[in-house]
Amino acid sequence: MASDPYAAGNTISQDVNVTSFATTTTSTTTIEQLFRLYEEGMEGWDVQASLLVPGLDRWMDVFLIGGYYSFDNQPFGPQTGGTGNVEGWKAGVEVRPVPAVVLNATWYEDERYVGSDWLYGLRLEIPFEMGDLGDGKGFWDRVGESFTPRRRHLAERLVEPVRRQNEAIKIGNETEDQVDVNTSVKRVTKVSITPRRIVMQDDVVFVNNGGAVGNGIEAGSASGTGTAEQPVDTLQAGADLAVANSIATNRLWHVYTQGGVDYTTGAIIPAGGSVKFIGSGTPFVGMNGKVFGTGASPTLAGAYINSLVGGNYVGVFGYNIQNAAINLWNFQTVEIIGNTLPGSFLQFIDPTFLTVENNTISYNPICIAGIVVSVHSGNTQATIENNTIVGYAVDNGQFTDKGIAFYVSDTASLTASVTHNTITGFRTGIWSQTHLATASMNATITGNTVSGALKHGINIYNVFGTTTASITDNIINNSPTGILLEDYEQVGHLNITALGGNEIRDSTSAGIHVDAMPVVGDASITVNGFDGNLISGTPAGAHVRLEKSGTSILSVLGTLNNTATPTPNPDATGVTLDVEGTPTLNFLLNGVLINTAVDVP
Image: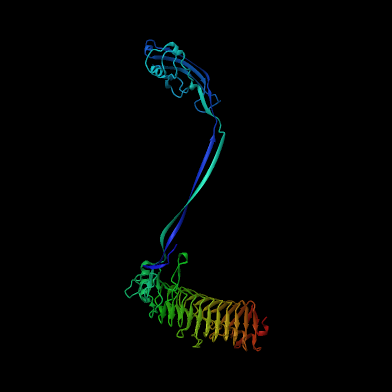
């Protein structure tokens, strides 16, 4: 059983009853053993003589006893322990203070006979004759007389009972005859229920510029402490507290922003620390499917989330940022996930790890792109995935109006994965430029849909640096040039590792244009796997245009095998080869010189 999650202190928590089961197993084993017991007299003889002490017999009988015995102490055959022949002298005394009581003590030379050198005894001989024997005495008279000291007659001694000599009996056991084993198992399960508090998220600074919410978040104020009971009322105050706490504790702190009332000021993130901004529309799922945070996303109206100084980590999850931007410089790790940005853009300068996923961006024309990644030093890994980016389709010049733009310069190295984004209405859908000889870029561009670009669906532009790219399985609609690959300087190289599976529709100039036309010197472009693209609806242009100047090298490795449909204009050509300058064409297809389109296999 679990309660609804709630905010308390600097945590998001939930009360639950934890049920535990403890099973105790008891095993009882009963063993029944059947033995046969025997007794048998020892073989041998025992002789003794008794002497009545004269004079004392007027009051009591006192006998002095002496004798000798010899027995075989193994009636069942060989035995373990102290066995064998038992023999030796014995001596003793027997005293009868009254006729009914007999006391005796006997010494044995061989202690194995009775288990000890001495044997002591007490015996009662009480008459139980109930009738009259002619002497006029009854039962109680005879009993009383037997406990009275007197002289005993010889006749009484002659009728004394014969005593069995138990010392001469050997008792032993035979081999075990039968064993029965029964085992019973009993299991007892004990159920205990313990109430506990589960912390779903700790290290939280709460921001609320509206009234109490009902889930533990109270109304915020300028004097708030950032707890759920005393939230701050601006995003800036929340960022300041979170970064300060992060630096003090060396942990990631969160800024939970309650939606409902628009925020007109954003946040300039202080230097250092790690901070994660979480909008109230972002769910925290607790036990039993209970959810904290299902309300409206907080809206930043014309308010930026900005930092020019950087830090360890920054994340922005679940905000509605209107007519502004997220502009972050020099962070180690950046995550921008699940935001809506109407009239806004994203810009990142020199991050080390960047993730931009599941955002919806409506382009702001004051910036060069919907998403801008610009790196000048160090190594950067960027993942741009599942975003929807809508632009105004205004041609503002060569370096403006891109859906996604990468700029790599100086000594920077960028590895970028651009996958499954939907881009509509820009001058160029996806654009990259690698500038300076020490800069490099490695890009994977796959599964994207670009529509309505004024110039190019995808444009890879290498200037001095080294660019490696894989461009596969993209859909490009209604762009003058579907894919443009350019190398414009003599230093560096553009290497396309894969160019296949793309579907390019209704391009007016060229479906795919590979351009080695340097401003200075000779350019170098290698295209691997130029295969399996579908190019359709190109009117008077070329489905594939290969263009170079001078002694630049444009080399195609693999099969130049693409499906081209020239309709609606039959004048469109399959492959166009263009050259400027005096030198030979120097187009290479698998190392074979290609001088005209007719020579293309």
